[in-house]
Length: 298
Ligand SMILES: Cc1cc2nc3c(=O)[nH]c(=O)nc-3n(C[C@H](O)[C@H](O)[C@H](O)COP(=O)(O)OP(=O)(O)OC[C@H]3O[C@@H](n4cnc5c(N)ncnc54)[C@H](O)[C@@H]3O)c2cc1C
Image (cartoon, rainbow, N blue to C red; front, side, top):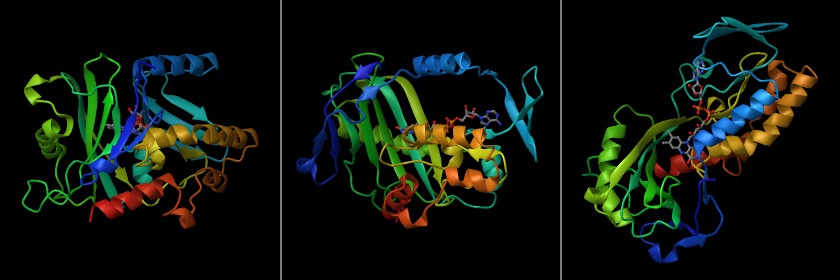
């Protein structure tokens, strides 16, 4: 843990006096490089092997196992009883499974970690809006911008701020570049800083497609999607990392049992990535994502 901060605020435009302040919720900054080193050490201590720079070119499934074709490594083939596809949204396997299906929604995010005279760099915003919907005459129209802001672990004057929005996947929707323009334009009002006083340390940007049909049901025996490849995400912790970590212990137990009793057929694996339409608007993380997208992008 490189940073600990409190309190944490949730606040919405027009109801600033009703801001909700919490403690100890999403209040830690973790050094990703250290986390990756520790995770790798544990994996290797348990007998795992990391093949840096190695790409999976294809997977062939046979009744008794799966064969992975690799490039960028001295090993060109691997065999496995179970393939965990954790290749993210762009996983070639996921793209094949979702072929022809347009995403039901998109989350676009831009942000930075900047050093500067932040008026308050002790507390954080878990979610904030400081504008209504973007007006019809704005360069980017009808979108609701949400913000997050956190003190960063790299220094006492460093602060990470994100601006994100939910929208559909129509081709005329704004680019990340256009969103960045709005991010810088709204930043002084949101955080009470002048842009000229900020020293940008890092820029962050990305987009996540969301599909109602998530978690993705396995398409073949012996291959299971995990993480972004499976489509799990939650607007409550923003994106797929929090959702993945919340499912981690359940997945670990379920996958261990499936391998242990050789329950690796498509139907067996489907029980691990179970989808319950009855919960769509109530409890599942992906359905909440859709509800928020549905209610904010129209
Ligand atoms: C700016 C930004 C901010 C975010 N903030 C949050 C947040 O606050 N909270 C949250 O929960 N989530 C957040 N997310 C989302 C989060 O980063 C993802 O949900 C998470 O990283 C998913 O992890 P993953 O391991 O499933 O996939 P990824 O992190 O996408 O990892 C997939 C890996 O597979 C590799 N790969 C792909 N294809 C191949 C191939 N053919 N062969 C070999 N390897 C391959 C890729 O190189 C990559 O290393 C954010 C994302 C962005 C971009």
